[in-house]
Length: 418
Ligand code: SF4
Image (cartoon, rainbow, N blue to C red; front, side, top):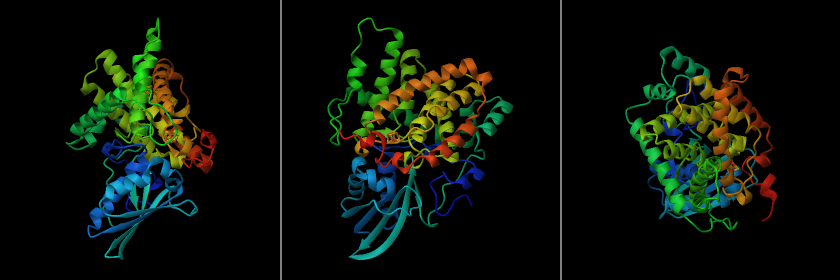
């Protein structure tokens, strides 16, 4: 039994390690921002609750932990009300309760004719993944037997296959069409974001900048500066769409959704890689993200921003390695570098909005992914730390982070009043 204490659409628990990994379709999800934990997760929770209890004619949802502390800024209540409409729903924010199974916990109570008919505890465990506090729903199976980079790399070496080929062998027939749809959605987010203008919602008065970054060329701009500006413009485009509550792909989360598409879109524009090649790179990135999700966490509420932006950076670095046809050691090293240099990164969004520092951070991480693959391709044979070890370290570091720095908006930048 892989689940720790519940039906699980989750694989952050230690017991999952012994059981492999879930499909990459559980990692890459299409949904509305701004937060996979705070909007996509609760949205899926509401749909799952109503599917189970279709007689529900009124709902009460209580949000706890990080969901309560930053749920207003993330618009969790609005998403819940919109998802269950026209069923009336009361959303309560309980910031006092500390004895919780997960930082993102919610209780849902359904009523029919004024009588309580069901009560379920649901955890939003990161990346839009949810877990139920009972055993009533079938567990999503782990379809990969392996759960470490070391083991996967060994299989790839033994059989002379790429990481994406290993993934396809484990996934089902619908997987490639799904991944093509994921790439199409990522491109649409970038293209919409580059056209968009105005002020982001939430009251921080943050202006959307992707369009001006994309268009405003410096006089005598060097190719390096142009590359920097383009990659950042694409990362801003997706992150601003996310902050606006528009559709994005979790990669691995909403808050970090801009990093991976930015580096891949730039490469496609510059070097004309085919969609097929980009999708192969996306799949390689997915394996890296899945390993982090399985063995550590991709949730800012659980392990800070190192788990979101650090993971996205590692995925982007691995994707570039695949695109450049680098061997598996260099891909591993690039992903390791990306995590290593995000260790300890805190999650402290101002007013609980996924805007400051999140949007700029996506752009910086996209550039770091390019640095990581470049460094790895030169220095791979002198590396000392494996990807699996740095993922373990990230989890340990996350546990040591004060709760103020785990998506509660109680510390760091979040204390600055704008
Ligand atoms: S600071 Fe990082 S982890 Fe926290 S909401 Fe922003 S992007 Fe996500």
